[in-house]
Image (cartoon, rainbow over all chains, first blue to last red):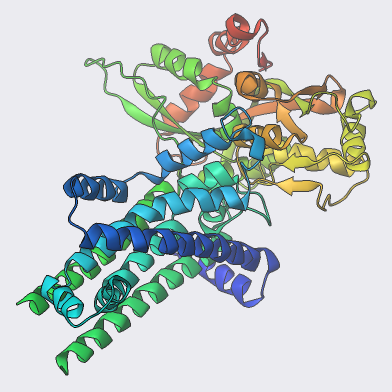
Length: 238
Length: 295
């Protein structure tokens, strides 16, 4: 009893990872594949939306900001529920037979990550001085080049946007459980496996996955910090 | 001017990101348990008696059956001094909760593991409470012809042989143990392959998955009847002797609330508690979901 509950589980967890136990690494691979795909899609859709929202002065801009910022607080379980109902055999998209597949998980995760990517991108793009863009246009830059310049200036913020999205979805449990179903070797990801192994009283397996999850979040944060500090150096030399 | 504001905002957004991730992480560790603590706790206040809490660890399938919604209020009426809080987990974790003294009393259904639990000194005594039965459910038309088998074990074998897909709980639960026992009886020591998928979830979720994917699964009748309206699968095999599901109550050794745990164990096996069990489900389903059999 006492602290041995951690030390025992930790020893078992490290042994499991080191031994290359197949199911643990399969779970990690599925997590990376699903959340990676979702983050890429959210990047592809969310960054253009964010740039547009951040640069353009249009009617209802504040409403747009409000919507995206509310989206940042969108409860993933609510997203999971709505996607699960839509994809159910009795739902409007039941014909697709998509519920309890990896594709369904990607759909839910894109919806969770998208508002984050849009809001972070818009905030960093809006922070790029307007004079810079006007000057670039005056010097003959096209609209396209203007956007590229703004994105280059705001790259740390955009990277933060993607990292925030990825961090949110890879550590999310409720939605993927509802739309993925935690099927072994198929839709079982790190978070749902942790819930399951805990439920089964297998703390070692649960902790080994929790450690990997923490490690991934740490890596994402490290990349961000490096990006930020190198950007500061670059700006400092100017 | 503008430049300074830019770095400030991007720093702020990084800070926000870190805070956000911290929140996400903390939120996760909270959500991980997913156990439904206290939803069954009755709200009745009786100021003249001092109330203490009992943690009752039980299984997700028992909770999904809806039995606690009538059982817990009835117990509170008989013993106003105790508030029973139900934590619904798998049988595996329920037993671990008992070993760790995180629960005072267990109501589970995996007789061999329960015997071991008491023999190892983690529980004081185990008493029979009630039973229900398992049924094999699958798609309309029963394409794998499980229905014509002589025993439940043969029904499962038919699903394997005739191209059906089987969804296993795969979570060490009482139902999962029962299912693995049936496979072993059918001569399949470790079922595996494309046709055998483990959900690792509770009975309700596994039923929904089997329904969506038009596959087969083994379920307790109570959970199945409760979810009937949300499912597109039906009973394909039932009634054989190997589909019997016995529930037991165990008082945890040196439990935090020993008296309360003992009171619950005594009450649920008393005539009063057994009457609540036999009445449950008759209104809704026309038949009791559980058959009380305490001695």
